[in-house]
Amino acid sequence: MATSTFESTADAIKSAAARIGDATSRVQDTASALGHRAVSAIDAQRANAANGLDGTATGLHATAGYIRENRVKDMVADVTAYVKAHPAQALIGAVAVGFIAGRMLRRT
Image 1 (tube, rainbow, N blue to C red):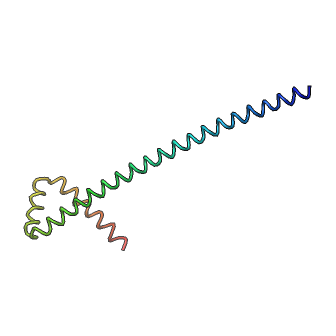
Image 2 (image 1 turned 120 degrees about the horizontal axis):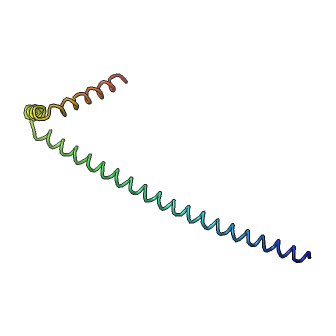
Image 3 (image 1 turned 135 degrees about the horizontal axis):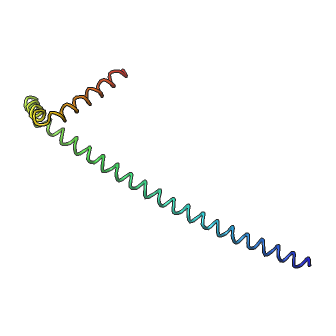
């Protein structure tokens, strides 16, 4: 009787150890999958940031070229033509610039 109790206890321990091993494997697999997803998400964010910065650099380069190649009188004429062609957008832009300028001046 003691032997059968000992054997059944040993079997129960082996079974529990096997279940713990299976659970450990599942946790490791899940952690590995999450790690891969995190790396993929970070890589995607880096690519998005790089694309955004590249677009910004391109825009700044074009703006610098425009300023370098045009006189102030020509720039004023271009702005005047834009305002006449797009009055609503110009008004929204002016309000936005005024708001930002006001916030910056208030902080100092």
